[in-house]
Length: 282
Length: 283
Image 1 (cartoon, rainbow over the protein chains, first blue to last red):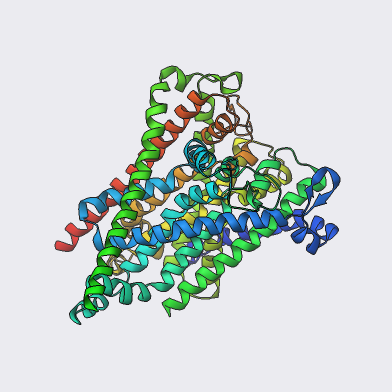
Image 2: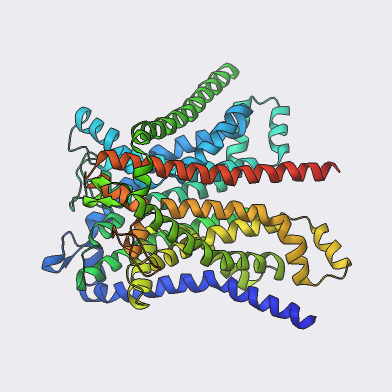
């Protein structure tokens, strides 16, 4: 019987190694495929090169880094305040009936394919920007609006969980001291839930940086430094998504190298989100 | 001073209500727009005919089959590894360096963008393991992608099982294995199911990773080694290249309906659990 117990433990342990091994394989294969090109071009030239012309062996991804950062910042500026408002709404203000519509709706929002958002952006957001604000419409602004919608479920659900996790005494104590409901939320609950909300924002930003297909549809994909938020841009993800279909040789390696940069950014973001959450746990 | 506080509170409350209702309105607008334009184009022929002239004519039968096959492969592969990991984390070990590394890996996997999974699936499954653009490559890539979701939701479900279940099983002379299979798992199974449903939804919705690994061939996939195009990829190509707005809307409407059904199934079981648990608690 002892044998059996030990045996099942080993079997489950082997299953449990799957996450580690898969992460190791992903890291290994993407680096093995992309690193030779970074070595060939030079890390500095790769990261800060202004020209991306695979046919002329020019592989500089600086415009895409700027593209990713600007679209993501825009999405966060719009999506984060709205998302936090929604999570406060759900925990503090929503009548139960409305909350029961809102939560599944947010879940549906999270489940809808990103390409559908891209399509909707192409139909409504892009023409609106072209007609009323100028430029080609396919732009940083259009991308920021659509990605803001797409990061909402992440921001809302994680902030909501951290608000709900607060001990009831915090709220009761503040109200008993004569604070108004809003004062309680603003000066007691939000500061107490700060680390969870920060983690929500970081994970939302990670989602925005990683989005590909919707971004391809609405960003315009021009490889150039944007001069305003109405200019089209290309991001790290869209660069891979657009060119992976036909790239070969050095060009394909350069796309994997783009993937390494993206992977590194995401790992840093995730590790910091985890660190913040852990620190709160202690 | 207090008056200003009250005013500020009112303004803040109004803003919060406004933001929440706006998000809700936007979501309904997106969904209703797609459904109104797409549903009229969905008929029996659309569901059962294969795409003709690049999707301009005909239906989407082969992409439906492709989606189901890729999803089935992903789920079949990810379930044993995901649930096995969760059982190990929740039942077999205490927090130590190994569990911390496992948890870190799962969290890290959850954050990796789908396009990076696409790159990995392409270089590992398609090229290195020589599976080519195929249902199998796409399904295996998706299995890797949904693994962290299944691990997390299963672990939460197992941890939520009251300790008394385990104690009773042990006191009756049950082994660890019997305890897990007969006492813990039945009680956790609905929570596990919820995670599986979410993962199915994710497989149906995924575009970038599947496009790089399963290909975009329009033919009916006849084996696991055949290339295929899933519905989401098909919709993307129809919409981006402007091949057929009518078929694009119809495909998008079908995708939204599928995701809706998956979500409802997941939630219905979840609410059944909480109802059952509360009954138990009263006893």
